[in-house]
Length: 210
Image (tube, rainbow, N blue to C red; front, top):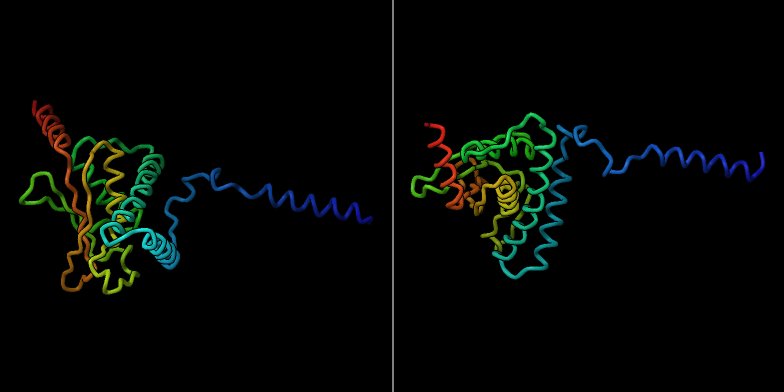
C-alpha cells in the first residue's frame, strides 16, 4: 500500500469518528433527564466560581450579590428546561401552586429531593419561606473567619428568583442561615412577593368562588 493510500485511509477513519461526535447543542435534552452530576465535580466548579467572584468584589454583600447574579442566569435556563421536558405541565397561576412547584419539582431537578419545608410568614402576608436542612451548595464550602457572615446559598436564591420572574411571579428572594440542632447548615430561602402578585392571586380566588 502506498503512503498516499495510507493517509487516505487514516483520514477516512478520523472523519468517521468526528461524524459520530454530536455537538452539545445538538444533543436531545430528554436523554439527559435523570442524570446526575457527581458531588465532587459540582463542589469543584462551585468553588472555582466562588473564588472567581471573590477576586472581583469588595465585601460580603457584593460577593453575595454576585453569587445571586450567577444563580439568576442558571434559574432562567432551568425554568425553560423543566417546562420543555415536561410537555404535560400546566402553567401555574396561583402563588401556592408556584411555591409547590419550586419546593418539589425545582428542588428534585437540582438536588434529587424536595425541600424540607415550605412555610408562610406569620408576620408578613407577602413572605414565604422554603428551607433546606442540608443544602448541597454550602456542604463542601469552608468559609474563613473574616467571611463568616457569607451565605453561599445566595446562588440558590438567585435561581429561585429567576424562576419566579420567568413565571410572572416577581419577588425579592434572599438566603438566610438558620442553623438548628443536627442541621448546622440549614438555610431558609425567603421569598417576598411584589404587591401585584398578591393582588392578582386574590382576584383569581374571587373568580373561583363565583
